[in-house]
Image (tube, rainbow, N blue to C red; front, side, top):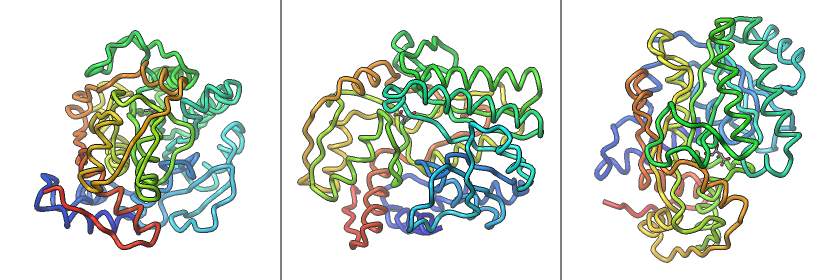
Length: 358
Ligand code: VAH
């Protein structure tokens, strides 16, 4: 809720120069007014996206609709966590237990090893990203649950067209993360076709959030904000011209909530591309300089992450998601930079110094 209040305030402050709608929470309010509250289990909920999704659902439906789970103890300052439970997604019985005990009707399955860390531990990536998905889908089939499992641009590979990549194209990824996400997409579609599981998925670009991710190739696009505030400088592990698709956190939350709320009849596929905007390290550094003129960037290329990034799309075609269930991102690069600085400054308990880009 705290985050929601902050971006509401920032949003109003930038109303003069941004084409964004006046109320950034409108899309969430509209859905909550027309759809009844789900009972959502979020796995891997202490990762990059879980706490934000919990906050949005709580804003929409009150505190009763989300059950959070993960395998680590809560951090001491975790204010945006509710009904938190230990859940090992490799144990199918434990998933069933929580689904039955908590009367869950929807699972948002965020547990996964990301692209860079997956390459350092392939057996664990296979366990978490493949066995975990199998368990979730089997529980969903048995208990007739709706299930959202995110996919990624990492599910594409070097033989995929890299510009404006469509939903249906070559998918031959070269990372274990990508291979396991193609498996999740195909297994989910199979469970939908064979057992009627209401499986839904999206291929996310890099997500820019105030919560840090762990072990992704797009992580620099978050770290750059922490470094800008703490050191005025960032050393990037990707080349300056590496273009990747990205999306701001709130748009990501909206995409999950909108896709889960969409009428099943309107879905022409079960896995959709979604995106916000694409940029290179050089371009995000320029955008940061528009707010913080002295900001500096230099480069120390990580060969593993660079070769992963070079195998991924530079931009995505998400027209099918726009057409079928009304996907419409609200944040561009400059809006994202403004919101990120405001959120991180608030975290550090420093006064917010936003320079308007108007
Ligand atoms: C990663 N952030 O870098 C993830 C993502 C778009 C890629 O799935 O691994």
